[in-house]
Image (tube, rainbow, N blue to C red; front, side, top):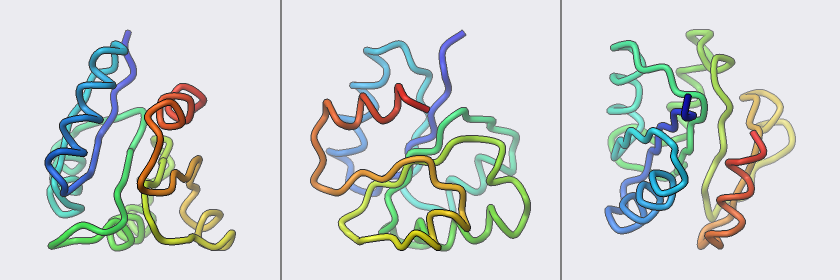
Length: 118
C-alpha cells in the first residue's frame, strides 16, 4: 500500500513539481494550497502518513495549521516534514513533533530522502 502524502504548498509550480516527484515514486498525493484547505481535508477524514508543509501560506499559515492540529490532538497521527526559508527552534520542532525540516529552496534528492526516511 503506497504512503499517503498531504502536500501543503501555495506556489503552484512547487506544488506540481513535488506532486509529480512523489507520484512517480508511488506515493498517493493530495494537495492543498494553504493550511485552511489542509485542515478541512483532515476534518473530512483524510488520513495521510506524511504532512509535507510549507510554513508560509495564505489564509492559514503552516504555523497556524501546526498549532491547530496540536490543539486538536491530531498532529501525532502522521509524520510532519516542514519546508521553509525560516529557521525553526528546537522548542518548535519538539512541540509540534516535526520529523523533518527542509530549507527552501530545496534539493529534490534531499526531499526524496527525507520523505523516504519517515
